[in-house]
Image: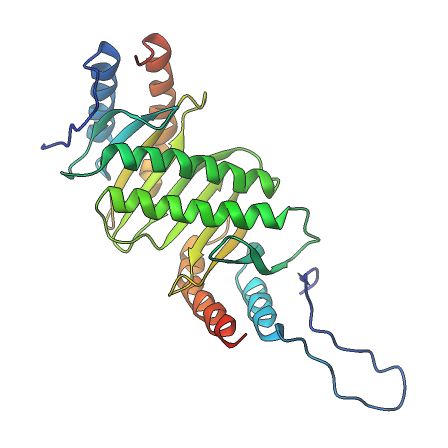
Length: 151
Length: 140
């Protein structure tokens, strides 16, 4: 799909001579691949950011050249998730598993990975099928956690 | 309907008029199980909730923080006009939405079986009404 831009792509050197060298794959390539696969397989998803539990961005992928300040975005997303969990705790409900910020024609879903090692932020168009996203997001969160544990 | 009227309520006209407004909203939108209004500083002004023994002051303070963080996420992604933030649990949802003037925020609780789209459709009217109510009689 055109326009998918991983911010930190696997470093594959171009083969500009006859000597074939094995491609250099960066340490975070599997995580980047998981984000890119999600970005291309769920219609309407524009940007994905993975943030650690301190709110620092670990990795991201976007359909377009990113214009956002990802450090601020991930910090605020993790804060929103924590505030959402706290609202739930204080209303004596069970644990919150996602926070969705909505505008007229956009949505941003923030969801923690299973053990809370990281949070996944997904920005999408307002017309995106939220049901499909909510079915697939836990699998992405699982994959993110697996990849982060191996780093 | 038993309600957790754990309001730090002033008992003022504004409070009772708001509670009446919330009662009307719950009557008109049965998908919502509870509704709370938080002031600009995050204190509860009025509420109609089924749950008991909840920490209402902490919940509204955190809801205000959540609303602020949601607006910050949107601003940093260069997205215009945040309307609401929804917290999803396994069998419930809480919608937090600022009023148009941003002088208050409204929390609406829903159970799993309810239809959030009906709440979303009715919410703008409630938010405008809360604003009008607070303008007419600002909380003490």
